[in-house]
Image (spheres, rainbow, N blue to C red):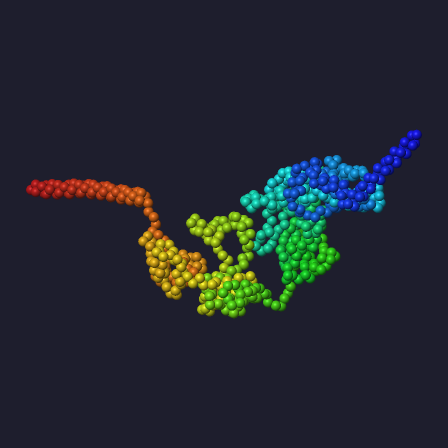
Length: 624
């Protein structure tokens, strides 16, 4: 009886299992896989082990790298998607528990403590095939966990950060330096961290890699320490050089003065895109240094890459080796491992031809465009001749040549104290320095030349040699002179050759009643100079300023006066004059008194002399 009951139970279970398998198969064929639907719902739900910061980190931070499974360590909170392909294909969501355990439905659990994503995939595949060798497992990271890391040292904002575990150490340091916010731009450059002050805006294209960029210290909770090298990771495609962050990582960014103990520098110069200087790290090779310089320049001789490195530790001598680019890229013996202090110089090709450059000619010429020149040799008149000459609407007084400045605007604005240093030893007045600063902000990089003299009067001094990148703008004639201010009919007046400012003011309806005729100014269109209508000094003193199309004439009004202030001023002047008169009167009285005393003394003296003479005469008369 018991055997019969057991047989019935087994049969019933078999039937139920068969029905379940049939139901799953039919649902799979109909596209309504229940497990897949449940999995999709779970992916759409917030996982309690991640919490609010995780979803924020997953959506708030941009992806900074392609995740390499060999270097990503699985941790509590990671969410995976497991696809099992076999007779019955299912998709299962997996979440790593706080114990670093992953529970795989119907297969068991896997301890992922200390395992990389690649190792976890191998373990999943082994577990699935242990149940059915015909099944295959595919595992992918669906949502990374959020980890807390502490960043300290040479950063703008040290502290605790909540970051996705897929983020690299270098990106975490960039966030601590607030490089993704405008705060850095608003800070005083002197207060910024040395790791963020990389000389990438140097006028000659040279730049220096900071010591911190290659030497960020990372201490994991396990006690293992690593050094993150963002430069090597980026240029050598080495994910291990810039690892992803993990739970409770301690990240320390060193200060630049610690570079004194780092063991030297590497440099590359010559025919490269950007000559650079970078801190040395063991394992650096020639290919890394060339990549750090953005590769070779167009005029580089790829067969003349010279490596100069110290032979002995004491620097007793040095040797130069000539390398070739093809063998360096092939990874052969010429991709030499460098030593501290090594320097690479890439030589230029020796060409028999002359150097070439280009200039752009725009505006009122017959054939505007870009023309080839020999820098420093080709002159203005020659290029204008190549364009087919000027059009009838060309106006040379307003035409300019703009030259490319070596110092970029980004570099000029990077240090707010750069322009102020020009005032350090000035002998001018504060008003002059203020005007200088205004002029400095408004200046344009134009070439000093008079195009009318160069092209119409054959002036050799104004027929300037051109440089690569020059832009020649031939302006169109404005045909008018603008008169405004205190005139009766302000506005445009058609330019007339040889006419004076008085003539244009008359054409504008003459002066208004409150015009200050003594302060009329001509504003030149070419350089915005304010000139008096007549030349005030020099050999041409008294002659009228030549007006050209585009110039402006400004007539100011008589300055306003304050009656109370004027009365006070007159009263003060009168009071001052009264004090002066009173002082003069006292001085006169004092002088008169002195002269009176002198006269009295002289009178007494004269009286005494007369008395003496009389007494002497009387004594003479008494003698018998």
